[in-house]
Image (cartoon, rainbow over all chains, first blue to last red; front, side, top):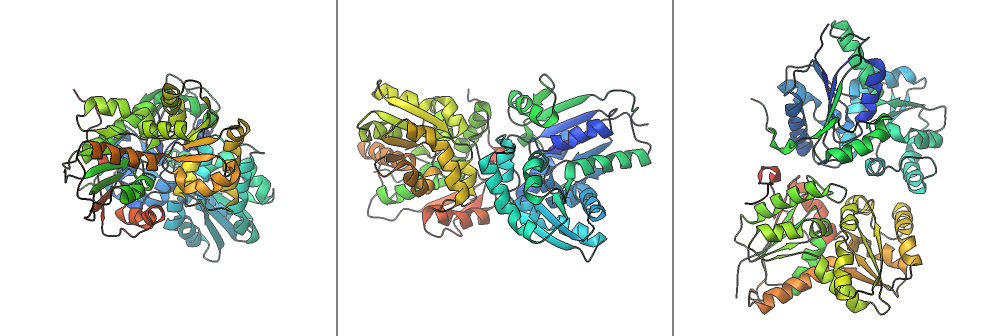
Length: 277
Length: 277
């Protein structure tokens, strides 16, 4: 048994979709979450800047005595995971490998779509991970830069004409390619599940990267005898780089529960962003 | 005559619409521009974070021997101008006062609309500035949180179905209020001038806040005998907090000219963000 908390971070609020799954799969675990709401979104920034920001996010979390870190962010997982693993001894899980495995498992035809931020699609990381398992997979990838701003603006419901129009535009080449599985390659996207599923059709399996990362974390900790007592109720603390009040107010949309009084602001820019020797 | 450069800053690329007007109105002036592309957009962030970021932007510019600073950003002008003026001796111009004067001058009916980011509309700064000149003005203000992401994504042209749908949604209450003048209260919005004008109708005057700020800067420097020789061609240097290459590539959209090799990256998070004593 390992009673230390798990660290989780994201560019903003999206990673809370993974935290919600961790509540379900890892109820006894303490969680320390950092959301970089003062610098969200990451997905349109350069790889260099994403790596610098991710180093600061990890440096903040390492101030706690953690047993593992989950990168609940598609952009960081696709663009900075290798650097972060190389520079840190603590186990670090991204969302790419678990989602790639789940997509290959789910697909009957090998036709798999991947959607994500510009940085995620530019990296090609999901495609590489899927091809490493199933070389003959037929992949269709599409960058969807407006989906994070839409989710952060709370425009996630069926019937929102702008969201429906944007989803249709991004997904039309993916639907036309005839995929039977679609990787939601950004932890914001599960909030758009209804709109995306309506457009793609119920026969297309949607892979929730946050959920798969939570499953992978549960498996990793279980195999290493690193789980906390599952009968206890885990403590959760939240940190954000913009206003704690604003974070708490929006977090309910993602978590389905109130976290007022559990959020603190962090001056993330004061943490080291340079390469570790 | 004062040969020192003018400093200009914005949360990202939008302030370049003001710089373009400065080329025209102040051709002899040297300009140092900073765009905080590593942390754009500001408009959805808390007032506290906007003030901290604006302090760092000014601290970076003060490393040059400047004669004045133009805040080419609606969000900073509405949310942090008073703090920045109080804490710094250098003349600092925002976009609010010049735009308010221009709006009152342009309006025949006193019906004036104001659009901007969430932070800008929350501040009420444009409305207060307009009412200070014309207390009986009939004002309609509307936050337009998706317009900056659309502009930064390059979706500015007539015929873009998403942009047209978003503009229609935001502006329908403004049009219904029967305004004859609309303040484009964010320096990104002039790039959407065609789409906005098509929806509002040609009879509605659009106030370009960057253009008005450039005019106010020209007037301030002219009155104080602080202009450089207008016969020379000013030098322009650009700094950005994300990739210099990405900045140069997108800047052409705003400036209509190529600035490759004139851009450098700045580690803006290393500049002081705390209140000045």
